[in-house]
Image (cartoon, rainbow, N blue to C red; front, side, top):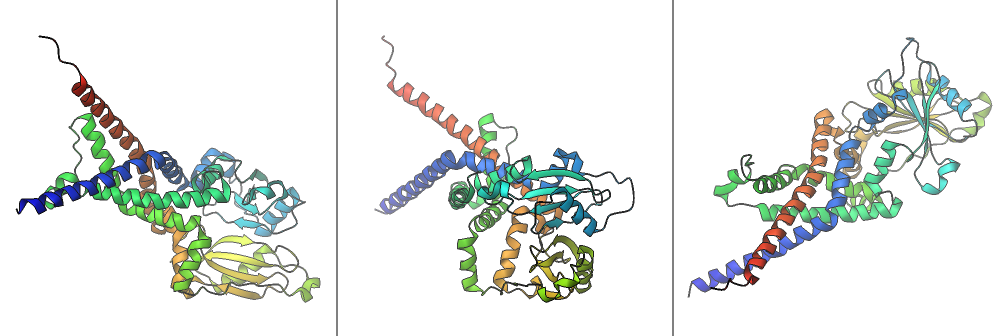
Length: 395
């Protein structure tokens, strides 16, 4: 009598395993190629600036002179090159002295119908020459960025990628369930049998790529979903932790007759507030009512390229109008500031970026090894079916 409950229990476990095996298989077959492309493109985007410079050598300038132009002179070079761009520019200040200064002009008329597609103009900081003039999406790295985040489908693509991310979480969970070994077989399950058959090696590569990359893939998937659909995720976070009030500074237009101060003067004023921080971006006033926005990275901030320390400067008087300091953020806003640097790996420096690079490459590896394993099983099943239906030879 006691064997009956055990048999039922075994049958139930077998049914559950068959369910998760089917779930894992069909998710892999339907979404595997998309996840492979997303992982591969994400790995390349980890080194976005480095690859863009490698593909466009003009962005690496020749330092024939030690005299570096003031930021105001760089801005005037932009205005001369693009006289029909009346609104503000956003200048990125590179880490390396031999890098061009690239400025973004948001919503140019040429790409107004494409949503996010700014004009990017790169200036030699020593000569003031324009070394590159490009629209977002029309050169390799920005095309790759749009492929990674939206499959080149715009807003609908972002929603689709968020759905893919949610299904990837299910695929990862099912993979862990199917892999989970008894305690006495754990070491064996975590070991690659390098001298086994090709089929065994392929299977081991599939399961170990998923298990060893699991934590990073979970972080990348969760942060990726949050970055894809901020209109849904941010309000949810804000219900748990009220967001800060967004600064909305305007310059004192009554002092317009005094003329606009230079970018360098605005940077100097803001720098007095954060003397130990590195300036990352300078945003010029959009119009006569606008102000300068100087973006800094304090040493402890997780994002190296897009930090959250901002100082707004009156474009006429040079007075500080507003400050946004992440050290004062509540828990919800702090969490939001960590999403992108965790997703790109830059929160952990070079080691974090390399970890994301390797984890992204695991996605196409999982897809290819999974497909090979599935095809092999299908061949074996076909052979077995043929053997069962084959007629016996006459005696």
